[in-house]
Image 1 (cartoon, helix red, strand yellow):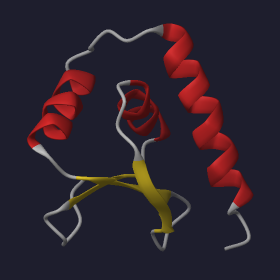
Image 2 (image 1 turned 180 degrees about the vertical axis):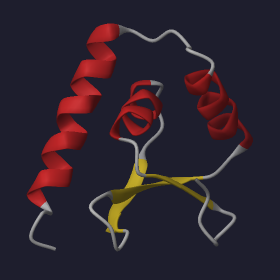
Image 3 (image 1 turned 30 degrees about the horizontal axis):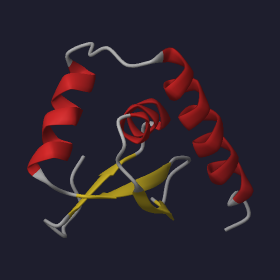
Image 4 (image 1 turned 60 degrees about the horizontal axis):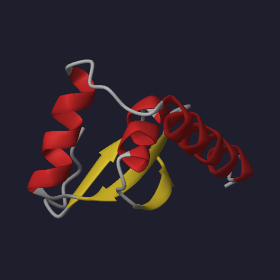
Amino acid sequence: MKIKNPTQYSTDSIYEASFLIARGFIHLGIENSGSAYKKIIFSNSPELEKAVSIFYSNGKISVLSFVNAYKRMKGEIFSQKSN
């Protein structure tokens, strides 16, 4: 899901964000989305858009890289629970 700023890409899927991080993309931050989910923000680029497409096409990634990224994202999201 893109946000209004075309230079940024956001997702509320921890799995998508973990996939992107495991592929080497750095997230810019985490924002409250006004719902039970948080938005994970990335800098938008053609490479990121291609990686998102790969994710939704059942792309392959190192399991260890994905699990490490997932654990890190989960820790960051839940550490901001009171925000």
